[in-house]
Image (cartoon, rainbow, N blue to C red; front, side):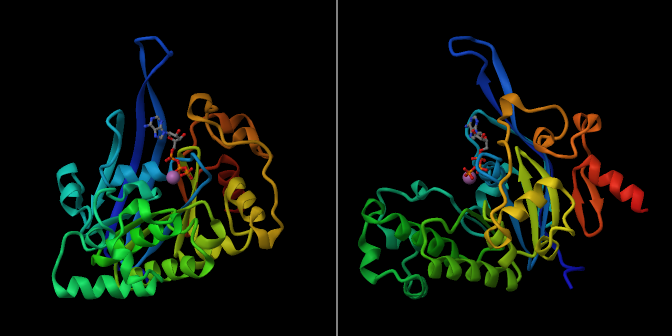
Length: 319
Ligand SMILES: Nc1ncnc2c1ncn2[C@@H]1O[C@H](COP(=O)(O)OP(=O)(O)OP(=O)(O)O)[C@@H](O)[C@H]1O
Ligand code: NI
């Protein structure tokens, strides 16, 4: 059904690194690689979820696409938008219009601008007023909230304001970075179904979350992120059962969701400074072997992709 649809966003072999001083008082600078070899594609009408634990690089992925990296960040790889390179100039022009970000932090709200004006992006026409009122009603925000400044909002209210801001536009691409924490269940459901509706109307949606269960409910495809790299990409359907997953970490994540018994994953995700050779999940993996310490390619597997030697071997044996 999704074949023949146009590609909205294509990220190919993205890497992001930060320049940092090697020692506290030293002058030597090093490049800290935080995202390595990341590829993700979003077609029109599609909602793709990027799932990963804290510190895996999810927000940086969003900021990289939107040209919002801090001054010491460096990005490599190719990003195209609707078939053409997404240059820094172009992204600056489209940001906030065709391409919208629902940021993870409410500190993205302008502290000196009243909420109403902010949601309407400076527009004063009747249609904009009507649309913003409608969104406020939908998200349970009273009309008087329009006249408040961001510091007068509660955390949950501020989140809802950010969502209204994104929905005001007619975006072709929405990048939502953890849009639901702090929202009560009903508002969280409303948010996700609104994003789903945006995708169903033909836009592309990239949903960033640490919540696999939530991603399975709304996304078409899920990309699992671990320590700055993608380890598996599969349809949301493949995530409904452990057997259809290809990577040991995705299987472990699957066992960890409440309905599957809160399975515990031994160990912690490595930080960039002590990344192991080869597979970043290697030290925590039951199937760890010498081969896992080499560079592991991102390969097609059925209707998805995986980065795992064990899974490749299994595939070879089945073939
Ligand atoms: N400006 C920076 N300089 C150096 N390292 C950074 C910088 N910004 C982020 N990082 C590092 O990059 C990694 C990824 O950060 P990122 O914010 O993308 O994680 P995340 O997956 O969004 O986490 P969370 O779920 O907590 O939001 C972290 O290890 C973080 O410490
Ligand atoms: Ni984040």
